[in-house]
Image (cartoon, rainbow, N blue to C red; front, top):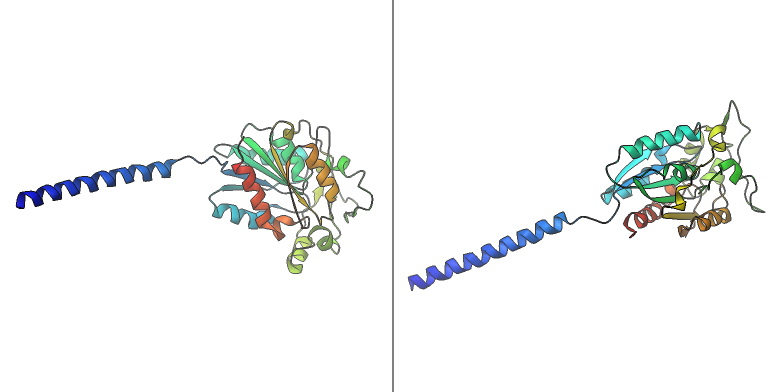
Length: 263
């Protein structure tokens, strides 16, 4: 009887040991399985604002394990903004999803040629083509389109009328926050406005575009036209130009679509 008990215990321990080893290998394998998603996200802001507005989107993406970096463009000239964006891209380890809002779309159209950039995401942005600038793209607005309250340039810089900023730029942002954004404006250089793209990356790299249907800065129809010619995957939402602040979940969602898309 003792011999049988000893044999049973040894056999049971052997089975448990094998099972434990097997589970350990499976667990290690699951933990080390590489993800197909692009984990590095670089966010580029547009004119009149700085990168701080990306914070709600940043937090949502960080919570899902993305490595998120925010470019602080000087918005003095396209060349300066490209240099700032390139510095952030260079700091990434591995492929990058490059995201641009508004004028930031011009920046990523050019900066997206960097070999690390594999996907482009335009958020209510100027998806400029070769030889185009914001200045050229806004020269002939669609009939009936809202006119952004841009004041005459002072010492080479543009600003929006503070009183009209909330309605034009941030119509669905809380009033207190919209007023702060108006008072915290970053002067936008006329040179940046005139900066032309030389080689639009969306010709060779996949792109996504979030159209904001209540936009009073870039007409929705203009957004649709730019997204269509770029061959972008398009999502439309009801939102203002400051959609990254008012609807960060929608912005984060389209960035994630780009990050996990099969190529």
